[in-house]
Amino acid sequence: MIATGIITAPVIATTIALLITSFGCTPTVRPLNPDNLQIEKAEDALVFGRIHLMLNGKDQHTGLRYPTDVEWWISEETRGMRFFIDDLPIEGPYILRLPIGRYRITALSFDDALGKWHSNLAAAFTVRPGCTYLGTWELQMQTGMFSGEVSGQVSDQLASARGDVGQLSCSITVMLLESAPQGRVRLVIPLAD
Image 1: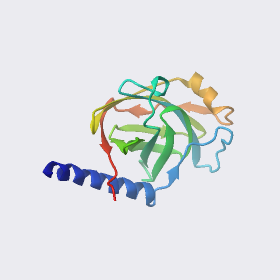
Image 2: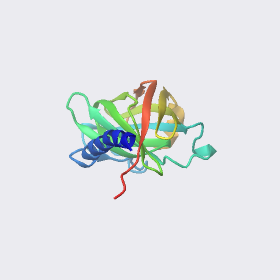
Image 3: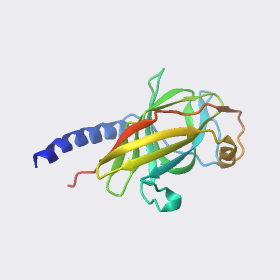
């Protein structure tokens, strides 16, 4: 009984902090439809890449059902702007519209049937004018009951990614995402009413 209280306090604090940042004043960014790729403001750019998640040796092609998507909490380094990026795929391409700048991914989470897997895997990227390609972020998660490890590696697969985004009306700059090699994950289960 005492152990449950010890585990629950950090989980509640983390959940509250993530809810404040994701639903407070932090703008939410969702992937764009490849048929509607326009840069609306001069200070904005298009960012694209791919994600490939392996969880305990499985991916979507070998029977992985959960998690279904990835969320990023990012912070722009010079102006301090924060964004919540929702609905990124665990397998496949994404295209985002973001202001030009240097960003840090401050947290990742993966939706699961029981709750959310939260990770501290550090990563950073730069958004240049026009279109910025971040590469394919290959994530490997090894989890137990409530915690585990995640590793990240980025590869340049621009030829494949060009097919994902259709016709771009902007020049492409390759600025591969910088990923820490290792991080931790823990499962946060929502409290019942």
